[in-house]
Image (cartoon, rainbow, N blue to C red; front, side):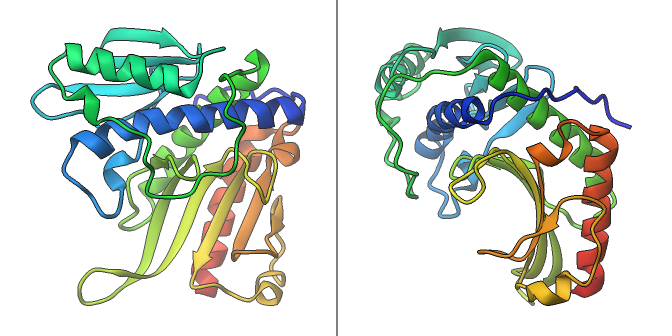
Length: 273
């Protein structure tokens, strides 16, 4: 069993507003390896790792400097690390993304890196957010801290049972913390069939945090709906799989519900595939 942090029930609008600020802020973290490491057409170098010890999303380190960047969910600070040591920090609340970017470029330059290369020219489209100061609600921030820590811990336990599962990463584009289980590969090792398992903090389709388990290529909804889920529901729109929302599990036996949902749905999708 994981060291589960109880997830509190807070106002959904506070979660939405805080999620938007977090989503905007993690683009700064992903921008460092994206611009300082060799170009990666998959953008995998910009994916982030959830550090259970620091409750932060952290970038890959820059070789030769051992420098990485992270966003703390404890205090909404942008941190620059060298190894496990924090070198510099800045508070993001009430500051703009541009101000944080200027700070980051300056501090990285002072450390001998080419900070002027850091930019927010993203290889994907972001939702349309208002370009105001970054603001978070303390209680909502604690919820996201618990959510990411809990799902990281649950996936750490489960991933050893899933053959060839990918590393657990957070992708700045959608801000989801997830792994991919390849079910079928071609002769070149390209994934032909897979199951994705992860946490979304919410998006334009589902406006609250949710756990998702999807399968690709898609399976018809009617075929999936023949199977009774332990919790949550089968998704009808956009993609094929199951959803367990924050509202579903926040007041229940959280760890048992979440772990059981992930384990059983992955098994069901394996059978249907």
